[in-house]
Image (cartoon, rainbow, N blue to C red; front, side, top):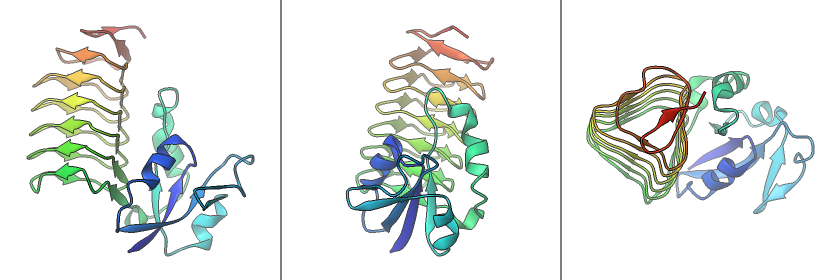
Amino acid sequence: MYDLLIFPFGGTAIEALDCLGQDYRCMGFVSDDKDKIGKSYAGVEVFDREALARFPNCKILAVPGSPSSYLKRENIIYSLNIDRERFARVIHPSAVISELANLGYNTLIGPGVVITSNARIGNHVCILPNSVVHHDSWVGDYTIIGSNVTIAGHVVIGSHCYLGSGSNVINNCSVADQTLIGMGSTVIKSLLTAGKYVGSPVRKIN
């Protein structure tokens, strides 16, 4: 069992706490919010960033990002100054991961997630509950996949993307880097230009 620190303290970190299974023991949350530091949640204390150095043997799960800040994920994670080997890979016990799939580091896989044959999940990726990544699909680094998302086969999702809950991407489509897909939206053809897309089928709004 590995000791673990989760950054930052917030909604995704709380969900990650339920994903640890028998592989990890959470030693604390790490936060930049002075109003949260020193408090606790479910018996787990919230520390400042000094905890990263104070507990050098702890693995780190860094899960920042939201629809408003997903493009900042790389810079935020980089600012932690954590060696690659220290990052964790947290997979809920109910997730189903093909032996032929490939998962990167600092990856959170939520309950009920299914990742099938030859799918490739990049580094610093969050996949939230009940989402499915089908065969031969790729999810790029620093991307967040919301809950109940379906990514069909032979899809390429770029880096630094955000796929809102309940969205769908049909087979053989590509989604450009730095793209947001709104909740409940459906992608039926490749999106080659970064931006924000909503609707079914999606249309670009920004």
